[in-house]
Length: 54
Image 1 (tube, rainbow, N blue to C red):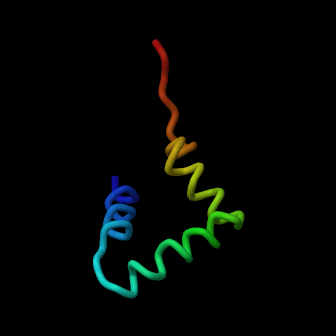
Image 2: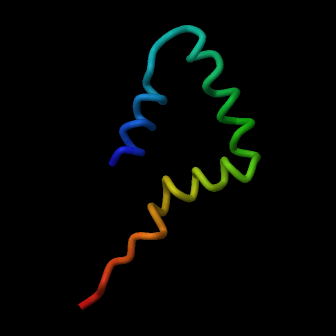
Image 3: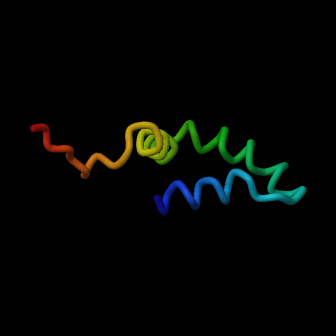
């Protein structure tokens, strides 16, 4: 939940400079191992959390 809150604050914060830089930084970041890790964490969740069946 904390990660999602920080993510939404970062994505929806206002300001001219933030609006200008955010897409450019995101584009560069997504081509790095850190960007891949962030994307995996956002889409698949925390790999340390296991759900027991049964």
